[in-house]
Length: 180
Image: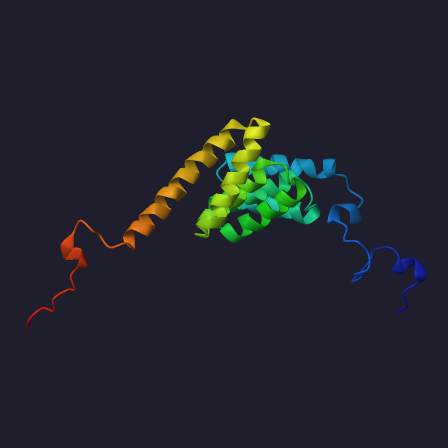
């Protein structure tokens, strides 16, 4: 079977020289064609089917990774399900698409908390709060302030646990071996 020249130009296959197009563009779809998928995902969330919503958002992201609503939905569902690495990737993609938006940094910070990377979480909560304050997104700003306070308490608790207690001389003495 031979391939004609016209067949070769239909869809680029393994052509790394071409700029990567979202699947949506390769299928000649507009974003509006995919928006019913958002309704489906939101309905699944209302019905308590977070796993189904995650699959729907993941499909939408595959079709158009540059659409912020798809990435935000995927990140939020992944956080809800405790799939923090997926949430972080989707939030990072959201930040790349909307660098001046608080939502991506906010989702990223929560993913970092789930991954126990509290330094990165604090950085992203700080940036999300700054951007949320600028945009008047009070709910995000409030959550960031609350989470930054929690991280500060956790860091202080960890520092205190590693510091000898000066007011407790017994804590400074070497333990005495029990007699047999």
